[in-house]
Length: 362
Image (cartoon, rainbow, N blue to C red):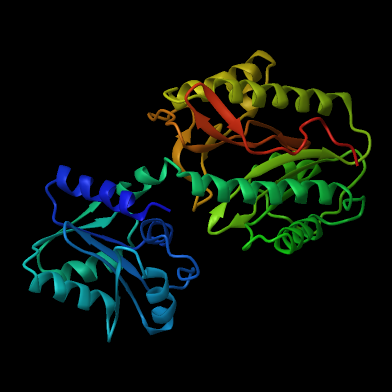
């Protein structure tokens, strides 16, 4: 991971805005800026302070040894809190004569208020300084995402051999998680979606005790995680024979998925990529059944910049990793979603997901 380049990118933003310091506390941004493996977990009390001269990583004694080992040979200086991390950061800034500080807009209000009171200088929030840098993936980042995607592809093949009528959605979700962990996933990228029959009409359905039934379509949305980086894929499978109406829904979503992928290339406005897929469904009278955007960036978070949707103001950048996931949802009947993960390239895109997209009947 090119940590020096990441710090240079963030410092350019500081120079552009004439600000002396930024305090970063979002977990994914901590991991991105430091490149530390085996240090930052969901429960960490940590922060990164970046100025023109300093790159300091603050945490408590629970993470001291791991952080110091990870920081060896990097630009990062590790500071271990004595009593209160944010009081100590503010005291250091004041002692160094820094009178202005930027915080991420994602910071909880209570933390913003506390830091503002302790710092006594100008404190303001800024949007997406680190997240914008994270859009463009380095080769090592793409390799981790590709590895996570390969594990998820294997999991899909495995679950197709396990699923059967009378198995519950929750059992399917658990089997997916067990399999991916056995194959080397750090954990799940997000809580899997297993939505059968009419539950498939809920794009973010929570797996429950509904049993799979013959004639169902089942939406499977899941991902693995490798070295902190996530994958995201969706496939929709049939339990036995399904009706012609359901087959038409599936064929329409598959065509929209392929049209969306064909539209992906560096410089393409995200709204145009969304439109390419949406028009396919419009032409088949299903446009009003596609109720979300076409995709999003994926990396250390499962939802990152850019947003690929009908109101997006962004364009795709070379090196971004994004999903293409059209879906149609018919309340009381079924849902269909097909999602692939792609790397944006200058003349098109490289498909990371390799699981088959022809309708699988179990």
